[in-house]
Image (cartoon, rainbow, N blue to C red; front, side, top):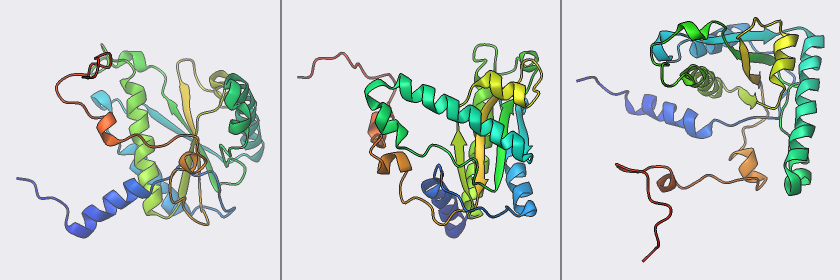
Length: 219
């Protein structure tokens, strides 16, 4: 039978999980290239359906391109605010990204030609996206262990980002990742602090044998 990690190793894994935060506030210091390489390698060792490894990672080092990507996000931020109706003003007060302050800006995309991969995707083609999410989570947890903050930005026009990065047909951006040094990590998710939402009780998300009957009349 396989042996578990020792107590300190196990505790470190759970600490990274529980202390990981979606960061939006960064210090303008560069990320050590050796550390960045470790984080990229962590992402590349994520599980993937059919071992298709659908992630493609672009490091944005051109200042003008970073600014252009930020403009795309800002445009979508305003459109999202308008779509939220009564919560518009509340949303506009939130800081949703740190793209101009973070030490590294990365764009994570789905590769082109994914239709060739059938194993694990015949009935669930979205498993390529799930695999990319696993790569992002690997990097996120590793960044926390390295003392670096990371934030996932999903407010952008897909076609605009695809055009800016000269992506081939079929490739699709999934996330803009802000990565860098931070003064401190949030004590809880920022959206929870801002009263935007709160974590659901675990019991609301774990079922046994069947989906509960939400339409049942309580006795």
